[in-house]
Length: 207
Image 1 (cartoon, one colour):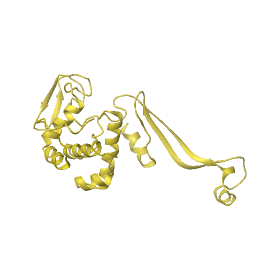
Image 2 (spheres, one colour):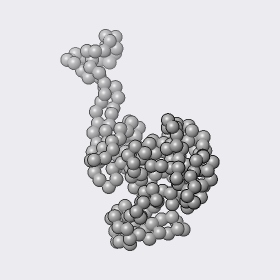
Image 3 (tube, one colour):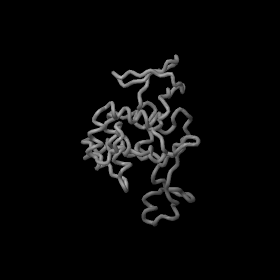
Image 4 (tube, one colour):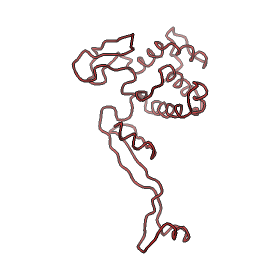
């Protein structure tokens, strides 16, 4: 996933200023993601048809086949689908990440794009997922997702006596003291995500 050769004129984008200037044009940003996602032509994410019409006014595609959700955008079914951020900001954020020698922090994106650090953190984790997996498609796609959970903790017999007295009341054998919940969400033949407790509910809701 190379973000250097993204200029439609054939010139390389080598600096952040050039990237910001180029992707400030939403049509240029849209064309960039369209070519990255569908290098062989636009494909309907619902039925796989290539018989697709494009509305430049709304930057929206429409499948010619009759089925639900015929209209879609370049964001549909990708890591960017749930984000209100424009494609211009996503393109610059991608450029920053793939051109950084040792990756970047969410604070760098926050300062460069003028967005909140929370939004920058959201974008950065999804960009890293896309770079690692080699695709913009979000985890799960249209296939089934498997989810399991457990608790990571220690055995009561390994605890210090003073802590054990505070944590355990009553009698019994060896007890597992749960410290942190852990979830594993995965799709068959695909990447694995390990959401935190805060993300767990939203992951299940989306999938």
